[in-house]
Length: 288
Image (cartoon, rainbow, N blue to C red; front, top):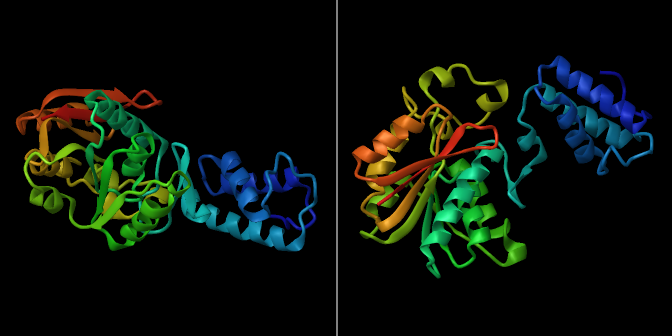
């Protein structure tokens, strides 16, 4: 990549995008804009000043990282989910727009229950995006986010305390195995469980995009057929969810029928699914 010092903003943006395209980054133009804002502190669409030495060096460094296929979310150190921002970095799954549909589904089910203070679990919580999303739109909910990985838990703990601090809302963060935690709860003590469990198959794990390969395998690997966690959670959560309560899963785009079959075999009823904004099945819910 040519030197960026002294370059006009639009020229610098083109140079960064070209470098990212050559490296195979799929959304080079978008990524270039984000990197420019991170490095320079200004929106490139509104900037007119040629790049000074220090921001030019920062932008070149960020471009090298992204060209090495480091996830853009990790480079930024934070990422938006719904209308709040989460801390994110190596060791935790990056929040994705598709997951917002899962959160919206959980909120709609809770609103239908018309409870003043529903008890909610977010299992395999990662950044805590699902549990925090529920809390954002259901402030009276008592939300516990459970994560097994110590690396991911560091982000969860920070997000639990800070992501909704401007609304004076927090959730409880617990470092524990999701299945063991659910199994140890008293019977009929939870109104809704929401989870984005690992769901990639062994074949998919062997063909990851370079960015996804940088994310923790623990958060991705769902076993040979991608369904290990659905089987475990459908069983371990059934006793703690009260009659009439709900279990809501994020699923892979080809998993709707298999996850619904697992739920039905475990005794759940009223199973249904919702598509994401790309038209793929993304959320499956089932009732105790």
